[in-house]
Image 1 (cartoon, rainbow, N blue to C red):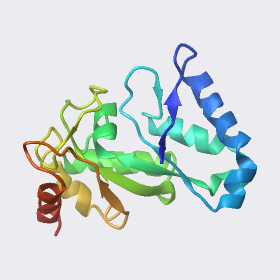
Image 2: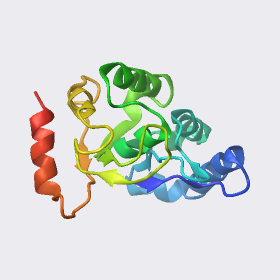
Image 3: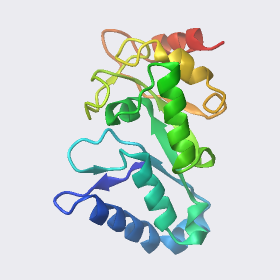
Length: 178
């Protein structure tokens, strides 16, 4: 699992091309290893590549055919919220799921990092918050129970601070499930 990278001063197009070239350069090792690379969605801070689902799709589609089955996506809830994908309402979640279907596809969604966000929708701020205590809030109930999202493996990636840790977040996640 990795963040795609940054384009610095070269722009998104050059950043995407660089990622494709980098992954292709380890083609033989990737094919022989049995490893699957997961591109983690990012918040879009600065020159980050991968905040838009379309960009992740362009990277996957830009890879040689034999490498495409060795890559997938890890959706980070704080990151996609911060990149502008609404996870706080049923309608927003449905729009986000449809955006995934339209771009890289649900079959490429292999894991989800669960975390709430400290920043507002579209702020491009990568600051994780405890489940249900941030700006996504009660939207987690709709998100976790969405039929396309429910079967995908999830990893808690929340702070461990004075408000609690993983145990408290896991309790809140279970409360959201029906």
